[in-house]
Length: 338
Image 1: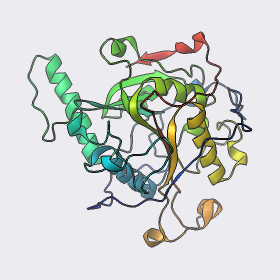
Image 2: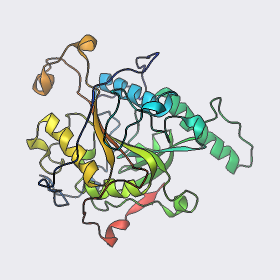
Image 3: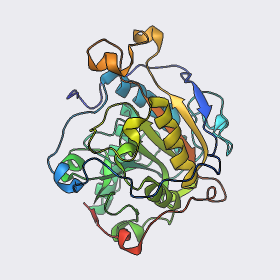
């Protein structure tokens, strides 16, 4: 695990980098959603496991750099909106800007949820600057001081939902911090302080970095996020191959890397998202060789951490047909906003 600075320099592209992208089709009816909650080796509660803050990053610097660039071209740069994903999962092979996210100038406010958030969200400097400017403007407004807009005229909020208060407090770009144990309470609802001031579908996008494998009720969580996302909004689930083995859920450890990608794509389809596809952010040959696979990396044989983004959109009609889940009314509690 790395303890380097949260936003070191990333490669800069004058035009969108090209990432291999392919659709993940809906699962056939013969493959049914797994029963939730998914089992784990260590079934003890997560509160104790995550009680101590971990100010580390869980992917290497090369992977972080590529992820920041993906975020920049997906959420920030203008000119990408013409090539958005469609509901069949077809795209042009470059990172797609969502109409409701990719152009801050076309929307009064952009909100992104960092799911399973920690002390760093891996956003590029331009997004961090906008988020902190929004926080400053909000503070000045509450103090009765008229705030000036930033040079781009963008209002950009990042909400963080995680398990450790100290880690969330250390993340300077979060407008709101929500503490919730998703494996105990997998249905996400807005805190009362936000639901009174935010629209019923406040989110334009959600990101989740190398954490979907720890969620024991992923369909319930992804389904509840669908209901909080504006039509056309997007979900971005970032995968690598590192994990705490005793805490991953279901059959994760028995699957190959590509089988995990397919499984997460099915999670999105089963929970009502559409246009599901995978974007390959793995290190390219010219950047550092093909690597030697995950065993080689563990043994120090070179090659950076692999990285994929499995993503989907909320259809204009509200999404696809949802798979059944096992939510209960009791799961709608257990959340604290900071």
